[in-house]
Amino acid sequence: MPDFRLSPELEDLRKTVEAFAHDVVAPVIGDFYERQEFPYDIVRQMGEMGLFGLPFPEEYGGMGGDYFALCVAIEELARVDSSVAITLEAGVSLGAMPIYRFGTEEQKREWLPELTAGRMLGAFGLTEASSGSDAGDISTTAVLDGDDWVINGGKVFITNSGTDITGLVTVTAKTGTDDAGRPEISAIIVPSGAPGFTVAPKYSKVGWNASDTHELFFDDVRVPQENLVGERGRGYAQFLRILDEGRIAIAALAVGLSQGCVDECVAYANSREAFGRSIGSNQAVSFKIADMEARTHVGRLTYYDAGARLIAGQPFKHQAAIAKLVTTEDAVTNAREATQIFGGYGFMNEYPVARFWRDSKVLEVGEGTSEVQRMLIARQLGVR
Image (cartoon, rainbow, N blue to C red; front, top):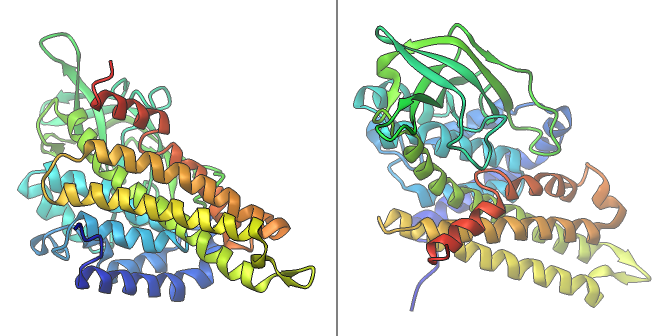
């Protein structure tokens, strides 16, 4: 029969990250969240633990693990806080992974050691103001001028793009047209601080308030021709692969948030009294918590399945879309139910469930909306 238990090594990793999340992150993250401040010291410690290097080979400064190990770490962080979890998820799967998957050996040796150590963060510049779900309909351009790419355009909602330790953004841009007259899209590394590269002030967000998100502008930004990542014209296909992987990591984050809701509600239901007894003794409350745990367990199995297929080199796109759809919608439900169980306290930001509620909704939107996931699943079933 299938064995869904973690290996001893992964269980050790899970316990280590669980302890870090509860002992280091939990006591302070609420204050960072309210100040809308990036937690540099927490990120530094995550780097020292090797979390940013989990899925990368040791030759590039990594830990020699795999993508599933990253997902296990993300889940444990998200049980306590999603801002910290998304910083890790985006820093690895969106910042460093494009260079590892598609970059030249020179690019890997230049950028990955700092990225895998967490001393530098990379960002992923795909979404634009007029192109969200239709990510191929971009307006940013890159034109070769001698030995340089000259980039013009803008990107929106870019995570990890404006921190003091952000080192690069890999952007998609139109670099010409193919033989059929369709836009040719390529991926190009733009180092932070490049002349003409402007990072707008941080957004005022509903959630993820201790994470870093900005709009970016490129005004005649010149970078060397060798900053092209992968083949010219293959940038869109490369980023689709990155997004497929990223959906598993977002599913892990969603499961972590869902489990955090369960954790908080169990403790609260056992300690909060009304009418002379704990509120957990009421079926209306205990059944809500039971349903929350059931959703969390099923969601975990979906991302475990997708992650196992990914690291085994098997097709996983279908399973990743299912995992992303199921876990994110269940996270929203769990966060809503947790807020209901806490009553008025659930509306107060001093309680983690209020943070979970604010953080959950974006999971149904980022890295492919729920509607996009349903479209992908239907197409893979042969529905036209």
